[in-house]
Length: 490
Ligand code: BES
Ligand code: MN
Ligand code: ZN
Image (cartoon, rainbow, N blue to C red; front, side):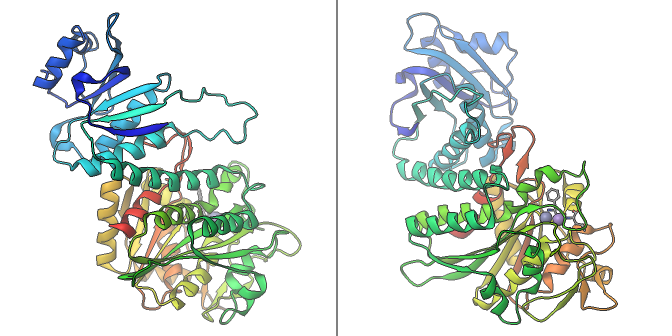
């Protein structure tokens, strides 16, 4: 499928499906649309009347154009009220159009620009079309849904926006990598194959790569006892992945992105009971998947920022070698942890990854993790929790997310709640009481960052979708690759 910025005028476009955006309450056609309506023998005004189409956000109507016309079908897409328009309105509209057009070979999209620049709209629409059409059929002997037939998508009125389209395509390729890593089951994506994926990225896009093997992790500072404790029951060796993107000129900033990469979370000896969603715990490397997806896009977009991508990959399993509930682990910064619950493993792996990230001398560390069910209880499936020790960093990320439409909500770093993590015998326990469970998890992580501005994103809900939502389809969403890439590149 090719997405094109076409200089062709709306009235001159010919092809299978022509989709036009309509604002809520503006169903009295604009001059351009009135002319098009005339040319299409009144199909648009007929559709509006027959379908009682009001332009509400998310609404659509499709009609056939009478015989012999150079456009076969026309689709109306509601953009919602003019005052509610956000960049995501264009993205959602383009995603809805793409889903309507899968049986067509050619699609033309014409949306009003509103107050947006043509660049941002072209990029957003490109991302949306690609991501809404993406299906992961790798594990089916025969694809269930018909593959989209679309060959060309013309962005009408956006002639000259080739670079923005290419930018959108690159970002979408990073999102799709993240989706594929999360969708792949734990017998396919292991610490080893995750490391191979990172190695391929390094090779193809010229990134530096370092893989720390188990022995290297034992020797890092005081030993990565927290991370290695989680992995010790698995038959598959852990792989601590560190990819680096360096700009050709001096970097104006250095940042680290650290993604939780538990390729399967059984819970350990605090085994997840049936009904707890244990069978979905292949998604527990969603943070690491988004980290590698962001690496793929950033390596191609080449911003003047140095970015370190870190995935402490391992499995949380059960065996005679498993950590016992109550074991005391020592992290690489020397802090000791009483493991009162082996199912709170993500924070143990991240503890050592954060210590490692800080030794790189970066200006900011952002971790992202499918860390707690408590965050899903607090914010639901669509919104990630955001904690930050640095207000400016929080504002940057929230602004970035505003543009991508990925949703975050800032949560409090309530230091008093650390009391819930106090241990009789060690420096801290790894879990506290049930109330505020996503906050104590964040406070636990905070113990492993000294003075670098730090942000924690709990993405347990949004990495997976049970039904299509915006540009996401059912399954892995690739959240929050777009926000991370936008944060680094803008
Ligand atoms: N990976 C889970 C969190 C999770 C839950 C991610 C649902 C995605 C969907 C994490 O390792 C975990 O098990 N957390 C426990 C923490 C508890 C033991 C304090 C939880 O949320 O129940
Ligand atoms: Mn767990
Ligand atoms: Zn987990």
